[in-house]
Image (cartoon, rainbow, N blue to C red; front, top):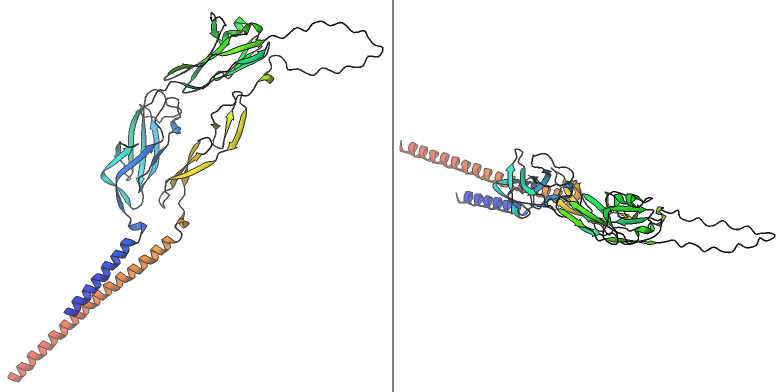
Length: 397
């Protein structure tokens, strides 16, 4: 009986040792965990005139990943284009990775404050929050500048502001008694014509001498209010009339004179000087500085720096966010799972698991063998006891 106890105790010790080894090996399949708190973030909040899709979402919680998010207006319809005055709801859906699950009563946070949520039938979680779009007044970052032009030339003005959707250009006389919209200048000065893009750029062609000292400014309006730019002056230099000269006497054989060099046609835009914006313009491929006339400068491809937002798993793709180190352009793209990225660690996990299984089977076999041996010994003792009883009975009778 003592030998059986020793063997059983040895088997139990070996089993405990195997379980301890299993706890030290980081096997992904056994890393099941309960998620009691979910942390999500938004890169921004709704601001009137901002693009709906300029705001990105992410989660930093281990064991779950972002599956989708979107904005909806007060009627529940998906928001598109830019935010306007009103209330918008953001919905962010996250799912648990393999080996994880959301706890009952999980706490959900959006930008460090608790948010409402619902649990979906597929085990995912959708949190939501309502925002009132902030109505920011236009902020001017480019004022028009004084134009020095010759009589009959072009005066070009540029003004830029954020959060503006309407632009009104006005002109004022030097004495301040006359103010009108720039588009009405041809009524005051015959021969003048107005151009530009109808927004940030205003061109006044065929500027007459009578406009010397007039000022031009732009009023920006948006959902949050309005802002007025600085006034820019028009300084007109009147062309001097050449003095008459005596007619030279004709020579016997006059030499042919060279044709005069071509001059810029009055009112042409050849005199325009580019003023490139300090802010960057960009698309999905490149960034540049742009003049109001459309000319580009310092155009170059984006220099993207990528950061992993959600790790890829065998069950779902991950995401990574890139930011251009020059202009600040951001982009989010999917991150595929790389089976070779573990550098052979996965294979070694299976080797360790195989060894542990063999040890466990050996322990189980040892225990079963000890039990069988114990039964055989018990049967032999019982048989020997019966023989002794039979022998004593035969000796007595």
